[in-house]
Amino acid sequence: MITVMNKATLLTAVGLLLVSMFLVSATSVQAADWEQVGYGTLQSGSRFDVYVDTRTTLHIGDKVRFWQGHVFYTEQQLPSGAPYMRVSIEREGDCVEKSDKSLQAIFYARDGSVLKSYNEDNALKPAGPDTIRRQVLEFVCTYKN
Image (cartoon, rainbow, N blue to C red; front, side, top):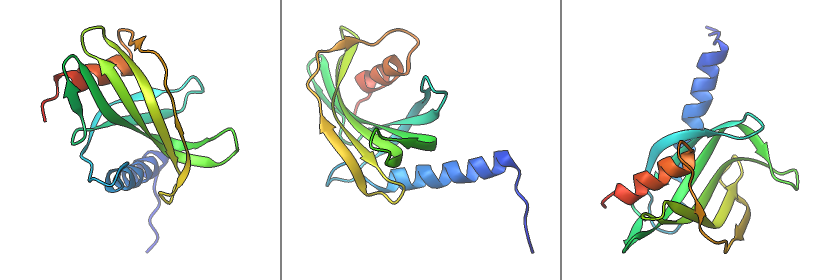
């Protein structure tokens, strides 16, 4: 029997598969507990779901360190041309100042292999209101593990 899927059903099935792959793999040797906190849209219009690893969220005073994951609905490309569907970003935030920064990013291929990783050491930047950055920061600042 042949089943015909409409575009929405197909996108939902692909999305569930990608989310499952994302949740199964961890960004470190430890197991991760990924919790969805929202979604974002790039300037190009590409959409992605946003997750936070609640198991590795670490509070030190007013600061918080955490892993944030993005699972894209459509394939993205690195400057090298390599396609990726998922990125994990280690971030640090200041819960009082409502600011954050990226510490490192890891880009994954569809099969889960690491395509590229890099470290950053930027200054904290304000997470503007009504942004996914602020939404994530508010989530991790109030999260108690």
